Image 1 (tube, rainbow, N blue to C red):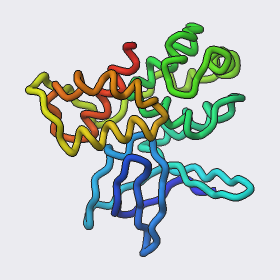
Image 2 (tube, rainbow, N blue to C red; image 1 turned 180 degrees about the horizontal axis):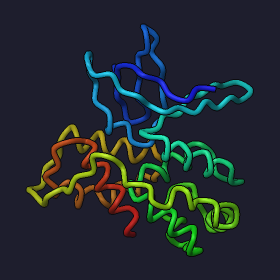
Image 3 (cartoon, rainbow, N blue to C red; image 1 turned 90 degrees about the vertical axis):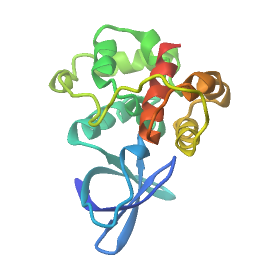
Image 4 (spheres, one colour; image 1 turned 90 degrees about the horizontal axis):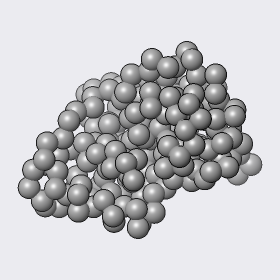
Length: 203
């Protein structure tokens, strides 16, 4: 079982990043690919979890150990698969997630794609009281405020919309926030994606 990999990020897409380690490119499914940038010089460390199924081996990547531990706890819940767990982790408010579980806030949990009422109740049942060691988890590193600016589409915005779809949000949900998201003068796809996730969680 891998704990982490160190290497160069050689590709970033809405669905995954590629981490090159000693000449081998590892495809890593991550919650927010745009937290990473392609580089030929900057070595990064990404925590990993290897999932083995009958016909597939998938590597999931995480920004830090806390994020990996939350992922592992989430996929231990009946009804939560890796894709749903990544969609939950994509929201930077990990403390909000933990508080929702502690406070039986099912309505908060059902805002995540792929999480219905029964699954949300199962999350609370299985994880309540088991996240105390992660309660002080910081929000995702590098989070920055996005200032209101002039409307206009950009490649960064389009990539963020594609990433939201990859996380499991429906085309209808993404379309509903596109106009509002386009009104923000973000500089990076990461900023657009974070703001998009915030808007979707407010609904």
